[in-house]
Amino acid sequence: MAVTTSWDPFDRALHVDPYDVWKTLRDHAPVYRNDEYDFYALTRYQDVLDASLDTATYSSAHGITIDTITPEPWPPPAMMIMTDPPQHTPMRKMVNRTFTPRRMNQLTDRVRSLCDGYLDPFVGAGSMDYVTDFSMKLPVMVISSMLGFPEEDHDQLRRWSDAALHRDEGRPEANEHSQQSMANLLAYYADQVAQRRREPRDDMLSDLMATEIVELDGTTRLLDDGEAVAYMALINVAGNETVARLLGWAALTLAEHPEQRALLVEDPSLTPNAVDELLRYDAPSPVQGRWTTRAVMVHGVEIPAGSKVALVTGSAGRDERQYRNPDRFDVLRPNLHHVSFGHGAHYCLGAALARLEGRIALEETLARFPDWHAERDMVEWVHTSTVRGPASVPITY
Image 1 (cartoon, rainbow, N blue to C red):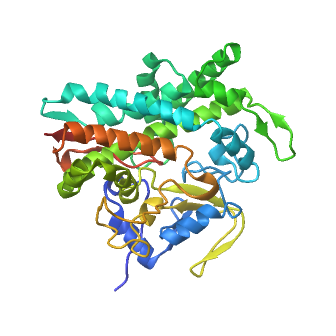
Image 2: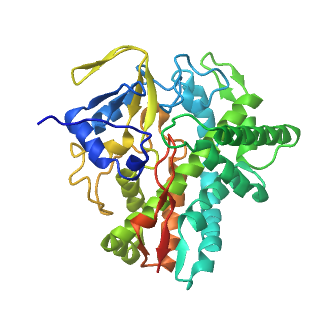
Image 3: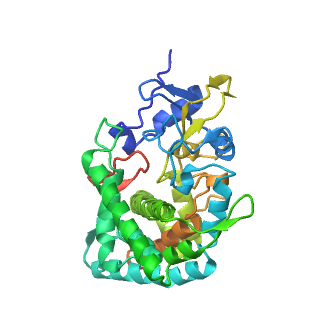
């Protein structure tokens, strides 16, 4: 009997549950070809890992989502995530120097304080929407605070970033509202850069603009305005969306696995591992786009030079070749080594921040609400080309 292998990354039903399809691809078409959208897909853990490490073959310079990859590299000022080594390396080193332990330590109290402010009003209320009342508010407040944006602007920035990533059903391209929202974000970032040029502050944006880039030839320079805007877009939009979805998954997954939630209530020291298990189990950013610079053979299939390739990190997290019982959610799972933050040169810049926010948010949630219920058929979902997860998770407790 022939096995049907087909995956449409813009199929909204598969935004809810793609795992049977991804397993079919792993087993029967580990190098999958989609003619409609003109891309290949790698779905097994080792293949995704290998491709992530091979930036010389699988380039990010043409775009990082299937719907935005172009035959020519994106022109400057491109986000750092859309450059490859060796050009990528000086930029990465420069940004790493701004994600300092001091800034992370400063954020710990800020994250906990924000959790208190968002969660305390719902103690005793009996119900809340964990996403709209909490998880989609927390990360944008944290990142915007870190960058130095005024608090009164944070909710508007979140609305713009949510809209900028939205995709209509059956259409991979951004609609007019999405395009306008991205334009609004970029205009806001440009204004913030102009303000820091006039008067630097004690915030991450000012640090970025004052930190020297050491070029490959040894010369040094500072970011220009366009590069500073690109960095803000990367840090603010990417960090906002992914953490919001991670926490949305936490609310839903822990409701569906009360025995696992009970382990975290009994022993909060398990929470850091639970965050990584959540990232493996339902990756908030499950598909990364690449462009092949040369022809490459994978499992006997040639992927030609100049091809779009989807690295399906969400599928890699459920690969039974890497994990025992991969469809089982287990907060005690050892040796996670997931690829949900990517790997190699493009390993997620905000991984430490995401883990910090995830850990504190779960600790504070479980301290107040050790038991809750959620109905999957009541959940609403985001529909984008980059992130996957709940847009709304009503819970009762």
